[in-house]
Amino acid sequence: MTLYGGIEAGGTKFVCAVGTGPEDIRDEIRFATSTPEETIPRAIAFFRPYAAELAAIGIGSFGPIDPRLASTTFGYITTTPKPGWAQTDFVGALQAALDVPIGFDTDVNAAALGEHRWGAAQGLETFIYLTIGTGIGGGAMVEGNLLHGVMHPEMGHIRLPHDRVQDPFEGTCPFHGDCLEGLASGPALESRWGVRAENLPNAHPAWELESSYLADAIINFTLALAPQRVILGGGVMQQTHLFPLIREKVQRRLNNYLAVTEITEQIERFIVPPALGNRAGIFGALALAQQTFHG
Ligand code: ADP
Ligand code: ZN
Image (tube, rainbow, N blue to C red; front, side, top):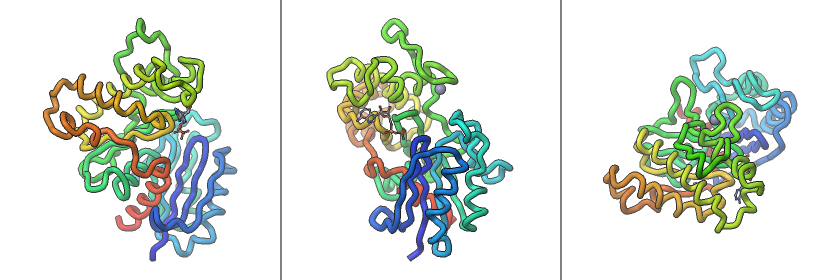
């Protein structure tokens, strides 16, 4: 059996795995993300014993990144505000050390691919995967291909109606203030309410507001891309009571304009948690490796 490598490169932690899929992980390691000089060699050291057997390695990375194969900076983490990581040649460093084909995409595009291969998006061609955690990010598959363009989608930074009377919070995004991420990420919840998101009780008004912003975002993405499903992952979505709040607002605010039963009658199948749970990222990286190998 052909072996693949995967890297879930997060801003907080790295997960590296070798295997053929979710049911067959041969080896796995996780460590905190420090400097690139320390972190990338740790990943290389993990894969080195397997290098001769690996058909490809897939990397789902925090970003922004350059995923355009034809670009001179393909494989770089580019303008990230994460200290030390801007303009890091991530793929180049691995390729030089391991001589294995490498697939490179955003963490959320990789997670989307994992859900497509083994999870909640099997059999679909067009869907989105959103994570609501330390940041907010979105990946998309459109007609069977992961969506790239001038760079890659940055769905967390869209603008939404922000009623400053109802919610005077300025937002936490260092670039935009009150973009979606600035209003609705885990750190935004903590900063607005003075309590970590995981410690806000279910009855707290935070969740009504949170579901309102997420519903508006999902409506915008749905109107723009016509996804067949919207998968919501990330730490904040551990609050599973958010799902019905979000679904109800999406339906009500769309006001039957998208007259398809997927939305009007089966919304609990339209807006769903990831079937792979918090493993979507690392399994997605393996799926990316498979896709890289098979072309
Ligand atoms: P990351 O985005 O760093 O990969 P997570 O997706 O776990 O990691 O997101 C971390 C954020 O999610 C933090 O802001 C944290 O407060 C929030 N979070 C984690 N677990 C929960 C939970 N059970 N309920 C609500 N918020 C949570
Ligand atoms: Zn922003």
